[in-house]
Length: 290
Image (cartoon, rainbow, N blue to C red):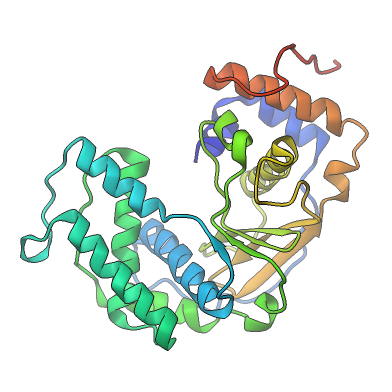
């Protein structure tokens, strides 16, 4: 999530992004169809990312997938090392292996069991290891309300909205451009549409969501041929999971903006300075016109 931290930490970046690519009007009005069943909002949000990913893998057997972030969490836990409690004294690796087996069974049968839904909650906890560097907590503990919440979110997926894609990428990265910002991965790409998943109560396009989408649009362009995602997206959007609603907008206002090339160069140089890395073409300091 380093793109998120970059956008959060750099005030000048936010100002220039907002001035150059203003957040579009958002007129969608859809009732909330899946009320939170517990207060575990962040846990449910990450777990549902896995649920939707698994559902899409079932719909699109040829979808391109990246390794789970949970696997990176496991590697970090083994490297530190950590010694969190697991049910019946299992090792972290065997615990994750069991979830992989449930995932494989789902792809074969199409039955999303409570055991697999519980497994997505644990995958979210492994994600937390990777994001925070802390041991996972409460592995194997699955509150009934959390399972019910995931079940209702699964039930309202608008299947028609996710049909008919020729190319589906799950959790894609942006090649060299991901390394430019010390790591960046999107949720879903359908043909030329990039989607971010938001499991939130309010149906609104917050400015932070929009900045993230613009950041992805710039990163995929900077990556050019060094990525599996399109060189430029045709559309970007958000899937609001608690509403079963998908919002999307064309990227013409981004790539077609007269100052887009200047902004992309400036973004690249700013990220190179911020993270102290190296990126092809970053040999000069692009000055944004004042």
